[in-house]
Length: 197
Image 1 (cartoon, helix red, strand yellow):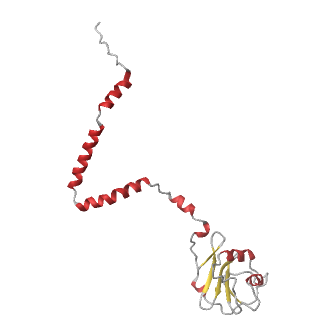
Image 2 (image 1 turned 90 degrees about the vertical axis):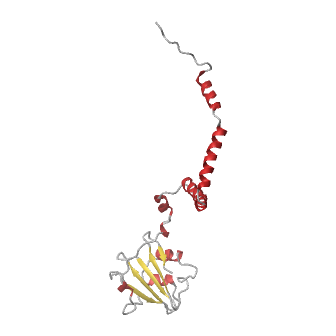
């Protein structure tokens, strides 16, 4: 029988890999790649070279920077800062025919029409809320979004306060008429209030 005898590799496979790895001249290979890139770069028009100098770093940054997912962006917004679309009836913003200065009796059902109250001498906003059977919790929520000009804290005799209730009897919109402007507060979907001006 004629069998071929395999030669045993001296030093094992690791020695063979090390010898082949050391035989590769990385410096020479790198220099060849650099020469080819330089040749291609010099053949490009100047405008293309300038655009590549700007676009290449931008593309690398865009690839490396992780972008948040849409769900993360939406969840980072606080509920009070999200915009809510209001369905307002333009006809309901007109002045009522007769201003109402006294509160409604408890037996009378609440409506979603505008109610107007004229501030009397010595009135505070908490007195106005109590007189019109409005929630003081809503007043506290309104004060939190009042702003630096403090329109709720500085009401004056003769000033008009208009408000509109929801069908459940909660305060929906509150409007304070000042000299030449009005400030409007409205209920958000989160239950709190927002301010228009």
